[in-house]
Image (cartoon, rainbow, N blue to C red; front, top):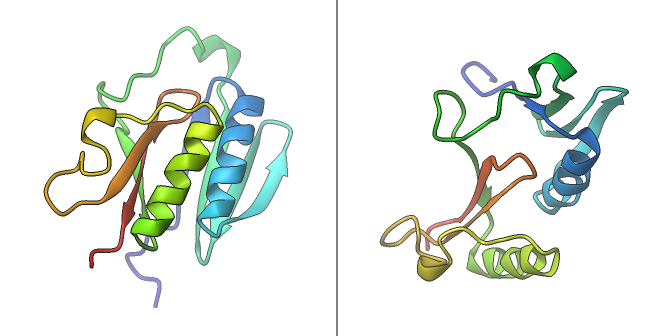
Length: 133
């Protein structure tokens, strides 16, 4: 039964090409597949849940996004285990992406939380958490 499960999340972005480049490889690492693609957006799907990215209209681009303002702060995904988090962290670094809270990585989420935190091109925080042992 799907009652109560998240159906989809839609995120407006500043630069659709940069966003696609970032999210495409990352979501594929998590088992998502490209679901839809059109001139002003794209989506990726895993089971019954999908994530949609849409190009922000030009008239709204001058209003900067910041995750600490009201609204979406971050997206958190399940990772399979610590090995997956370690491998993903290296891929992020190899792609020139900054690991957030590097001084506390991989325990920046607190005692017993093994995770990696980073940002997408619009500085939306993304988190991947390992399954607890």
